[in-house]
Image (cartoon, rainbow, N blue to C red):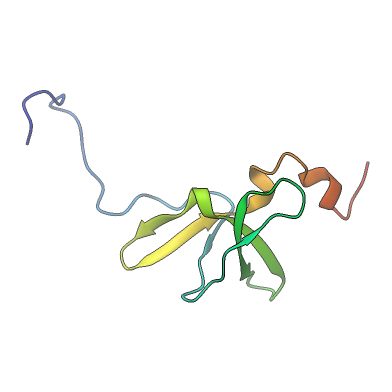
Length: 85
């Protein structure tokens, strides 16, 4: 280990799951968000609903990729919400 790291630093082999995180499909196609233009990929929730995932938030955990729902970082997410206040 490097001498410039604090002694109490620990390294996790796999980071813990993040809230709103989904498994990235193996052959996911990259598209652009129709509102903000960010790169997204589509996945399915456990209840088989389509959900956009942000390409910028992908992390590897073991041999699988995970990403956060694009609703978390899309500036126009309220426009796509089915529940308008």
